[in-house]
Length: 128
Image 1: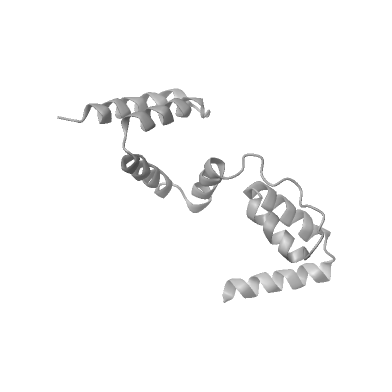
Image 2: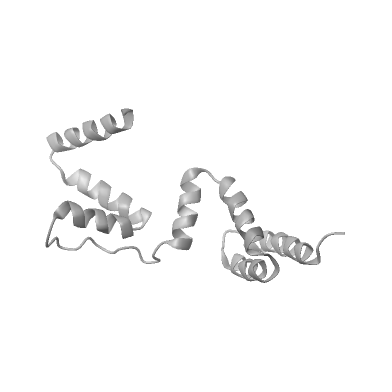
């Protein structure tokens, strides 16, 4: 006979998927049921399986939305000390969207010769 808590979770997953459409609202309720009915190991195992079912970019996006700062890092600060060190600090706090947006904007702002040097550097690092 199935564990009653597992049966309740299975029904909740079924109902959540039926109600979800494109919104996340029903999943908030599911998270409450999962916390109430499953052990930490069971929740971690389900999270692992769900992330493994995603491609890398999807999994990183989900993890970033759950674990990252909700508002991101904001715009990079005016550097007072070492520009490279402050840029690395900002990048550590920035959201994926901020990183992609600022990277493209900075790349496009470079003169053509600097863009070519940058691409050569990046492509050389990929080959290594």
